[in-house]
Amino acid sequence: MTLALEVLAVVIMATVSLGIYRIERGPTGTDRMLSAMLFGTSGVALTLVLAEITGIGALRDMALVFALLGALTSVSFVKRAWGAEDR
Image (cartoon, rainbow, N blue to C red; front, side):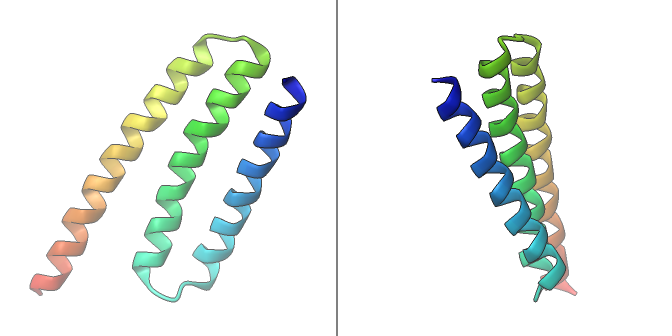
């Protein structure tokens, strides 16, 4: 089971590297922001996988904080995107 979780952690890190590529290449600000939001989701997933591998319960709390911050980021992105259309 631990090997499967470690492979899953590597796959999650691969998605983060693809997100870094998308942030660098663009082409629009929306693509870049969605990739940044991917970091939040991947951070939650990776933290939960690491919590399961190591057995440290505090990592689950940290994943919850990441999830809450990701939700706030999504709300601020939507507010900014809608504000840009009005201009």
